[in-house]
Each structure stands twice: as structure tokens, then as C-alpha cells.
Length: 239
Ligand SMILES: Nc1ncnc2c1ncn2[C@@H]1O[C@H](COP(=O)(O)OP(=O)(O)O)[C@@H](O)[C@H]1O
Ligand SMILES: [Mg+2]
Image 1: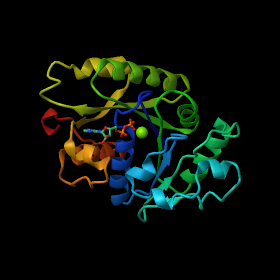
Image 2: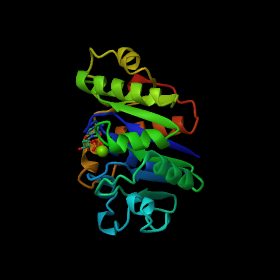
Image 3: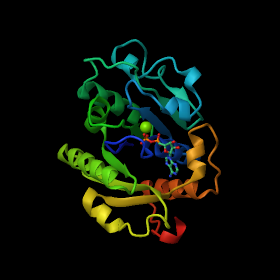
Image 4: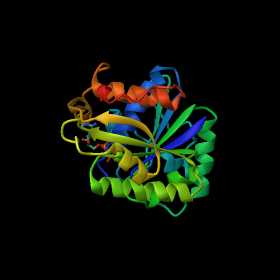
């Protein structure tokens, strides 16, 4: 029963892909999981989950009392659901209302995963206000690391103590000189996982399924297991 925000303060680093990958794996392991798209105006999870045409309501409709909380959900499988983002911002989308909503869904879902947008505006601040934990995603380049570091500092200041780092698109050959320890120091967050550069993950953006045994999926699997409290060692050869 926890709400985890996935953030970066920068777009295109793999947050939404990670949310979908984790959601699929957690639900396959019978952990009831709800993905909440926090990217107001630029939803993406409905596309990644191939349910765009089923999207009628969104969490904005629930806050505005246009529909019941259950009615806004899209059920992907028995244990995986999606709550789409609204297309427009409203001043009624306050941190208090969002927190109330997330607390309500937490009663039914073991994992509520909030896919935060790029930047630190509406979707990001609403996520900060309703999450218990945070996963910061970064790719191994200086701009992304700086953005991850800023996001981590803001999240920490808000009182969220459990902040973990996922390093995405790591290529053993290309990033030979990158020091992972330095990135961890910079972002001030314990490492939760490293995801390799993966053509299989890239293909999920155009609707391909991620093969179970692909390195990308196995990296998502190790992260999901760590989230569930399993002690999975970090081995650079797995990446
Ligand atoms: N590990 C990876 N290897 C290769 N491509 C990736 C990887 N992770 C994400 N991508 C690709 O990068 C792009 C941006 O990913 P996305 O999850 O939408 O990022 P964000 O939500 O942070 O904006 C997508 O085309 C996605 O398929
Ligand atoms: Mg995204």
C-alpha cells in the first residue's frame, strides 16, 4: 500500500517506459497495481498500454465530480489498472484533492505508481504531494543527471525520505568512463537499478511487446523485486 512517484524533471529519460514495465511485472506477480498518468495535457500511458480508445474519464473528472473513482479506471488485466491524466489543468487540481484521491486508491491497490511529467510544475508537484516514495530516473548524461539532482532535492525537501535512483539507457561500452558512484552521489539517492540501452524497450514505444527474457525486461524485473523488498545483488554483468 504505497504510492511511488517516478520523476526526473526532464523528459525522454524513460519514466513512462519504466512505469509500464514495472506495472506489468508487479501485476504478473499478483501485486495489484495502479498506474496514474500525471502528465496533464500530454498523456502517454494509455498509448503505451494500447488502451487510448478506451479512455473516457480521467483523474481530473474524479476531482471535479464528473464520475466515480472506479469509473475513471481502465482495467488492463485483473491486477493492473490505469488512471489517465486530464487533458487540461484546472485550479481545482490541488495537492490536497490529489492526495485524497491517491489515498482512496491505495486502499485497493498494493502499488500506486505516479508517472510524473517533465518539468517541476503541475503534475510533478501534485505527485510530490501524494507520494510516499520516489524513484528518480536518469540517463548517464550531465544534463539529465543535473535535472535528476534538482528533482531529488525538491522531493527530499517536501519530506519524502525514501528516494531511489534508476539509471536508464546504460551502455557498458559507450559509458565505460561513467562512474555510477558519482551519479549516485550527485542525485543523493540509493541505487534501485540500472537498465541497459535496449532496442527491445525502444520498440515498446511503437506497440511491440517486451520479450520476457530480454535484458531490458530482466532489468525491470530486478527493480520490481527490490521494490517488493527482495535482496537482489547488483551485478554489472547483468546489464
Ligand atoms: N532502456 C532504454 N533503451 C532504449 N530506449 C529506451 C530505454 N528507455 C526508454 N527508451 C525510449 O526512450 C523514449 C522516451 O522514453 P519515455 O519512457 O517516454 O520517457 P519519459 O517518460 O521520461 O519522457 C521512448 O522512445 C522509449 O522507448
Ligand atoms: Mg513520460
